Amino acid sequence: MTHLLRHIRSILPVLLLVGPAVAHAQEEPVSVTMVTHVPQGKKPTLTVKALTRITDVVLDLKHDETDTPILIKVAAMGAGQSKTFPLGDGAIGSAHYSGTLTVNYGKGETWSGGIMVDTVINAEIRIGYQREHLFLDKHSLEFQISRPSKNLEVDLTVYGEQGQTIGQAQQTYTDVPAGKWTAISWEPTDESTVMMMKLHASDPGGFVDETLTPWTVSIPHEDVNFATNSSVIEPGEAPKLDTAYEQITAEVAKAQKLDVRCSLFIAGHTDTVGPRDKNQKLSVDRARSIATYFRKKGLTIKVSYEGFGEDRLKVQTPDETDERANRRADYTISAEGPPQSGQVFRWKEVK
Figure 1 (tube, rainbow, N blue to C red):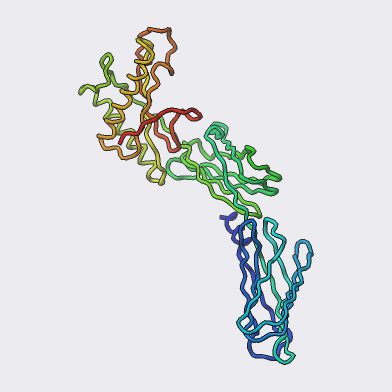
Figure 2: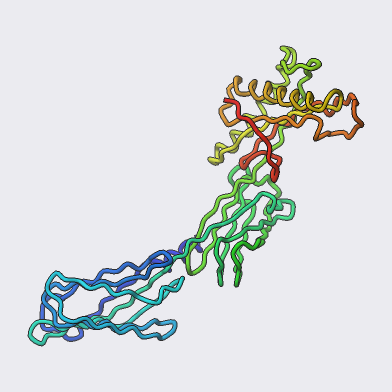
């Protein structure tokens, strides 16, 4: 909350008109409006609108951090006319200006008011993240930013499966280049499974909030026994899938409680008996059969399947070796994507 309040204070415009210093009329001769929070490439502006005919307007400001003066004069303006003044040099970040606005009008009458203005020029900042740069065992996260930052403040909050906070970190970085992997580490309050992480990064030019969901769960289960060269689930094998289904739905409920979207991935594997191409197809067919069973059972989350044939042996064996441990399927629930990150596979979704 502290970092959010700090950022809000930096972007809220502050306009103080103290005056008139010298005036002979009952009402102010001008109105002032501002645009103080703008994207990169634009400048904040201050607009003066004449409420009566005025002789001239003088805007005399100073950039408080650099003492740079801004002096703008405008000739006569008729009632209803307006003039817009750009503020600053367009540099990214926040600035504070103070000074006076002086208006001459009527028959030698003068109105003068003190002005204080806070402005922000915001350059969009984005966070880059890849699962390979999250080290849960070391309680460390690496991230990238989309543009350079001279002074970057980062807050990280880590949440467990019950939505409880299990770790926090705050760190300030100087001269961070765009695209560089930058690390932040947290001290865990317990060793619960990480469900979600919220990252807030800000500097004088902008801020970004990113939610990461690295949650992945491997479902322990008893493997289905298929007949030779078959992908049909025999009735006697269904109870194994029913038991796994109950575990899957229990894990999904944890994610849904925290509004985390997750998917189930079924990966099929074979032993080395038979031609490689045939084993590849058989592993896909068996994974599809299991995925379809869960879908028909009532699972509503996204369910995808893929086969790896004899390419990912659990027990390394020579070719043509009958090894029961290699004839298996892996059930993985993930909030970010397939468990084999960093590689491209043709995961198919069961409708």
